[in-house]
Length: 146
Image 1 (cartoon, rainbow, N blue to C red):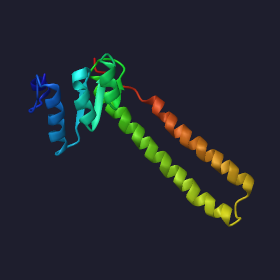
Image 2: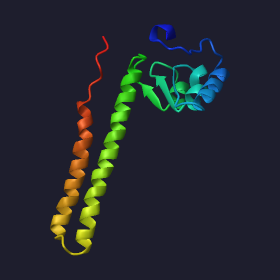
Image 3: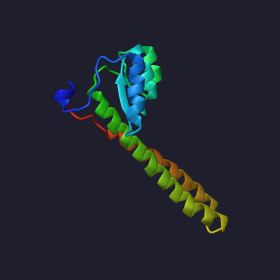
Image 4: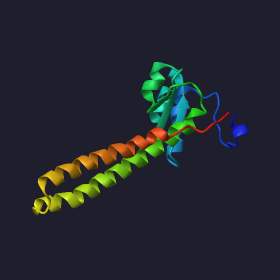
């Protein structure tokens, strides 16, 4: 499989303890993601920077991993990473806008230059804009891999 995907370094038929050792060694050079589904994968899933378990796998693997795919299809890993990245970016955007609202609104309110009714409306608008921005994630669609 690794050869078909163009992966030059692959480890196969590795014992569970050795999987965790390989992950630890790889983490010295890069961020490491591990995909697994069995009890024997749990130590490596926990040792990886990102552990991804298959929903069709064992409970131990799902508890050890940070991400659990609902279906046992390894092609979904790319989609999970994509939506994770988009979610993280939305969080950063929302923090920026909430900070900007407060950076402007609080000094104006403290100086008495902002009517309390207007300040309350601005805070409500801040919350609505953050929630609306987050809801844009619902438009995300997985890539068609058929």
